[in-house]
Length: 71
Image (cartoon, rainbow, N blue to C red; front, side):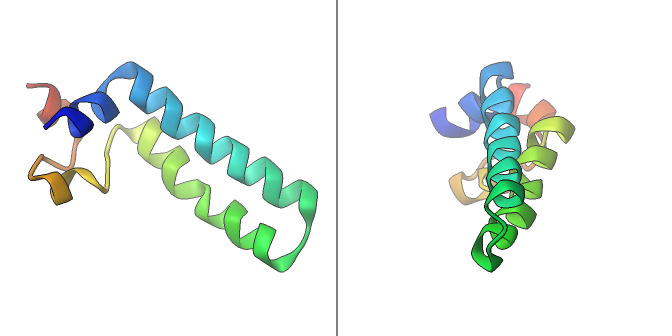
């Protein structure tokens, strides 16, 4: 359960939020249909970092919410 614990840490949350921002910025600056799709997808890691949930944690048998992983 190392991956979910890392993703629930402040470093993991910051990494997810940064990845989301990077995808959104790339999508807006590139202005191709694929880039706009990446920008829209960038909302998922951004929101998961900001709201402290990880959609991949249940795949590893961990809880969905970061506060539950840290307990």
